[in-house]
Image 1 (cartoon, helix red, strand yellow):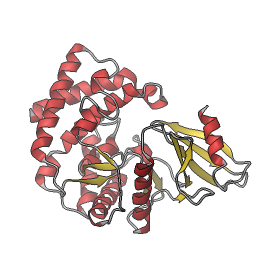
Image 2 (cartoon, rainbow, N blue to C red):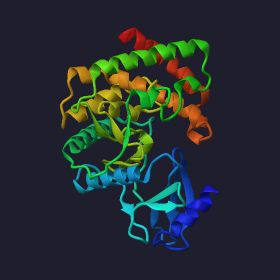
Image 3 (cartoon, rainbow, N blue to C red):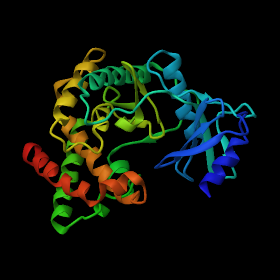
Amino acid sequence: MEIQLAEQALGLYDLPRDSSLHLVSRSENEIYRVEAPSGVRWALRLQRAGYQSKKSLASEIDWLVALRRDGVVATPVPIAGRNGEWIQSLGESRNVVVFEWENGCAPQIEKDLRQCFRTLGSITAQMHEHTRTWQRPEGFERFTWDFEAALGERSRWGRWRDGLGMTKTSLDLFGRTADLIRERLLRYGSGPDRFGLSHCDLRLANLLLSGEEVKVIDFDDCGFGWYMYDAATPLSFYEHLPEAPVLIEHWLQGYRTVRQVSQEEEEEIPTFVMLRRLLLVAWVSSHAETALALSLGAEYTEQTVPLCSAYLRCFG
């Protein structure tokens, strides 16, 4: 059914009729590689019904276009449909966008990523600086990734309490961790120097390495959040690995070449790592049918237990 919708969407663009479609990933949306017989490729994103409004999707594109235009970072280039619009609609509930294909490979965690994280830190700081000065278009609309949206009862990616393999002991441990995260973030605050428009999902799968260049893709979850949360998202699904603290240090080195980080901001990064980790425990459960969630399973919840224990010992 979804592939039929994607094929239907192709007819809304001035692309070769004999182009082929290949599913690349399925998460909040479905991403297809469109390939013409000549070898030219595009990326087609079929939006999940109800996840983003058309105005929110337009705002995402406005920002990523501005980032590329202003020389901040290489971002996807949207392609207009036959009607001249970037966003195409299939009925009332499904929206489609097509981007030029960006060459590059996603960083692999088993590689030496220290330089990658330093570069990413610099790029992230430039993105944060851009959002503070960029004049957003009228009607700009994006998610807000505060505590309630991440870990509250009506959290956007599901409830951490429903994590796969959750036990009575882990429920209690995760609950105390979530309470401490909430308490610390209330003290930390969300002033304009700490909280603003940011990518909010800079996981390795959303980066492309092309030579020494780091490109940033998939702005589908960009929104208003804590800037230091972007220090945690590149470690998504790998927060438990022993090299995680070292990679954060290299990210900070790069970030500080562009933007200052106060001691209080640096000290709160472990809170954002735990915020992200519990959010992903919920995501794995609520997206259990996806290939990534199936590969992680209940083990991801189990690997979170020692992280929560260590966080409570350090900050509780």
